[in-house]
Image (cartoon, rainbow, N blue to C red; front, side, top):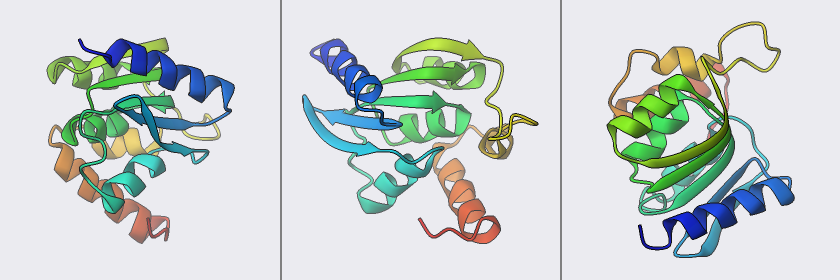
Length: 148
């Protein structure tokens, strides 16, 4: 598995020690880090350059199904999450993406922990990563009024 494990361990270390929420490594180089929550780092990268995730490793604080669909659809090769949902795990397994996590949960909760994360709800029935991307983008732009 070439340097995938080494890169994933490095991304994990940067994530945890640098107090980031998201780290993207490609060929051993740090490509992106973020302090943003949710799928925002994924969405910004895809909008900026949708080839950037290809063959990259990702370390993220929280990975739910939405983030898993984006990672697989844009061809990341490995993913680490502090917390990963069961649905995200299934997406990675279905797409043969190497993954690691510290904690697996039934689903990702929303920010105030009162319900399921809106992105988990939005992608619950989706399998196509590009449809997921379009739905998430529309949700951010029309519901949250955030232009990614």
